[in-house]
Image 1 (cartoon, one colour):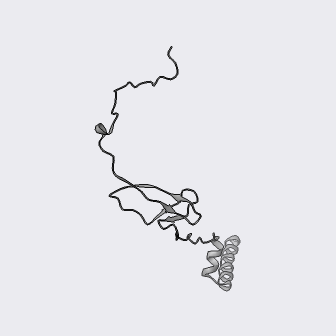
Image 2: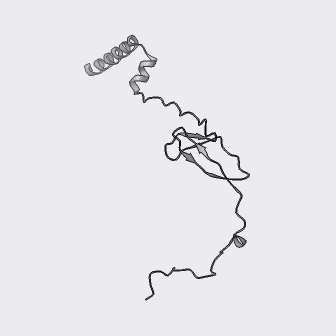
Image 3: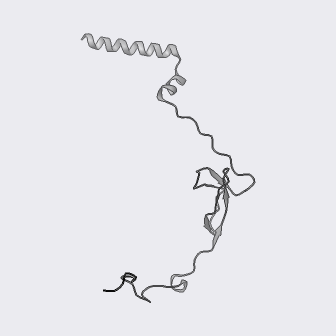
Amino acid sequence: MSGGNAIRGTRVGAGPMGESERGETAARLHIPYYCTNGHVTTPSFAADAEIPDSWDCPRCGLPGGQDNTNPPAAPRTEPYKTHLAYVKERRSDADGAAILEEALGRLRASREL
């Protein structure tokens, strides 16, 4: 039995080993992005690709910009609203009472049958 250090299924010279056989790698640009929490993210882009103005920080999720002194502000998040809160935005208390009374009237009428 051989030792546990052998690489199984391969042998020296079996596959491409250098860029001459695989082709040249694309030119890359490393662009730093800064978020409001001070995190720096440096993704790499192809040299001929369009560079985005902002990039989401993988640590905190906030947007990051290329300007270290002026990172983009955190987006404003709306608090979660319940279905009742949305209904109250559209209807007044009097409308709600009228709709409730109408629904209760239909329910009572169906029970009498």
